[in-house]
Length: 231
Image 1 (cartoon, rainbow, N blue to C red):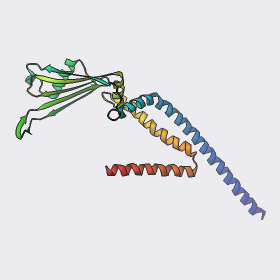
Image 2: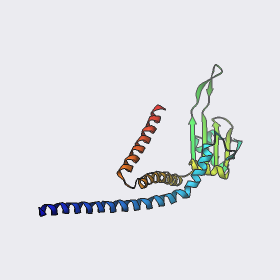
Image 3: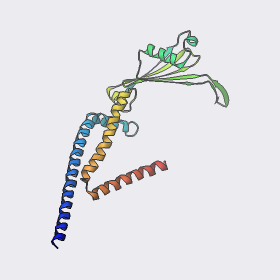
Image 4: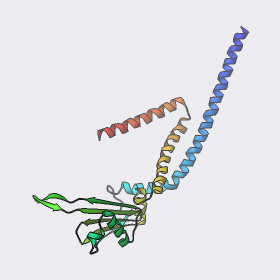
């Protein structure tokens, strides 16, 4: 009988030791989770103010518009050189010429060549010549240009951003380089980490709360999938 009691007592002691170890592991995990949450939150606060303020402005660019000038637009016509047919054999040649004429290199340069085609206009078929479209952007400035092959001029629209406009263009990654794109990705990733760590800290690793977190995330994913499938 005593042997049986000793065995039961030993098993109970083992269970208590295992429970204490599991509790220590849970406490240690929550401690590291809290540190991660704090440091990621600190990094997010550095650029979160920028993205938050510009996000409000972008949300109100059409509905409930906030009357703040973001760009100053100007239009001009540039005459092309007389030897355009020989000098501009491709869209890249004209892009380089535009950058030199405007003294604006830009960080994002895009050019699109539309071939000549026949279009219907006023119940008549009209032959439309080839068209070259250019976009040169940086955070503080944007240039759009259009050239109809054979014309003697290039139509240029320039948008000079105000300080607020520069910030909104940075928010939309307009005219930026790869470094800024990756930097802003860390903010987006940080928001995801903050959401997950915040939920885990709230749950305190309790099974019932973890189940509630899992059910909430599952419902959210299901709602997003349903809305996506009905669009």
